[in-house]
Amino acid sequence: MRTAKICLAGAAAAAMVGFLAAPAAAAPDDTTSTTFEVLAGTLDITAPTNAALGGGAPGGVISGPLGVVTVDDSRGAADASWVASVTATVFQTGGGSPPETVLPEEIDYWSGNAVGVPPTTGDGTFTPGQPTAGDAAPLSSVTELTAFTHSGGTGGNTANWNPTLVVNVPLDSIAGTYTGTVTHSVG
Image (cartoon, rainbow, N blue to C red; front, side, top):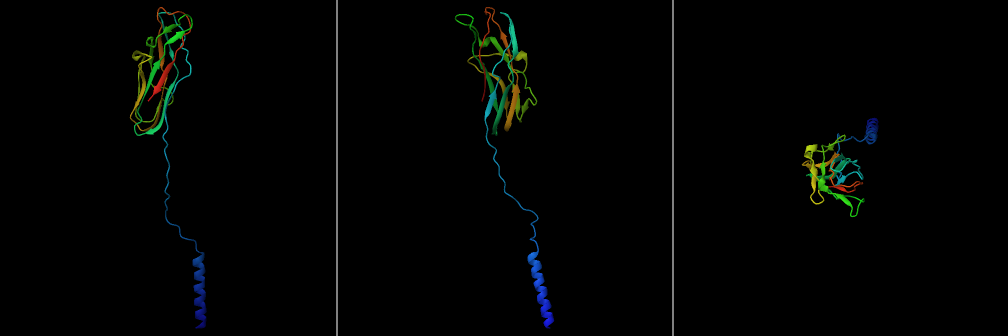
């Protein structure tokens, strides 16, 4: 009987060592609570610093591209709508006293359709203010002209266009280089 007790005690000790040495059983799955934050950005517009449209005679037309204008909307808004507008100053030449001028109303603007690869990003509807040359409209120093719009959509978006300026040179213009400012804004 003493042999049976020793064997039983030995078996119990071996089972205990085996139990303590066995690896813990892994759960079939586990979860981790994870968070991140989408940050609100800004609504920005960029346009070329300089543009040279070329030359033409009094009473003629001077036409040329202004360069690519870009709206970048990173506001992350539930309604990502915006309107891009354009105005211009009086264009002047230093050739006379007082300087000779070409008024903004004598310069037509047409946005054309979106350009680039890709021309737009994001969802919603992108609409050029003046999709064709036939839609060109005069600039103003007071009244903003709609250049491009985006309606609806959510989150971020971008649009690029290369507007054309058409200067209807007054017949009484004197020779010289005329300088003015075309200003794009977005809101």
